[in-house]
Image (tube, rainbow, N blue to C red):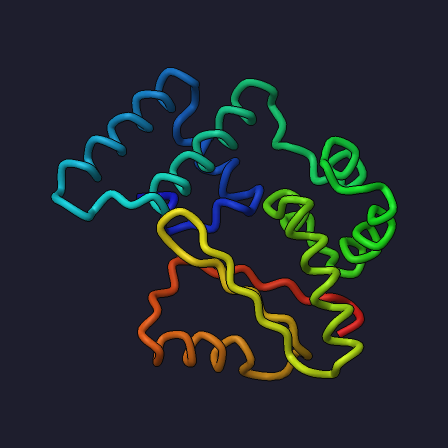
Length: 178
């Protein structure tokens, strides 16, 4: 499906998708047809990960169809409506500025942003790579924080694969301070 082949966190991909679908009625039908199609293939084909991807693509497409705009990537607005204590807002905003990628703000909840800030602080203090693993519905999310270098992503994915883990998706964010 489109949600598995394309990086739907990129504005261009959502805009292209909505350009194909055209309207809400067609989007709704396509959403249901895709769900039915995947579920009917056989046991184990439908996973919570596929469901989450499809739902996220659908929600972003609905937003674009109904408002004409994609959700804004404004970290200040995101933090204002979050449960993150205000004393952490400044460090999260500084972190977002160093990441310099609007997709980071759109697809990362404030609680994860704070966890990332804390991982960076621990990395800077200890000088050792930081790794966190969170259990999600039907999968795990592994977050690495370490100094960037050539072939780093290939090495990390190689280690995960050699340990028998399937990589369903990956997001890479580099901060401008290294």
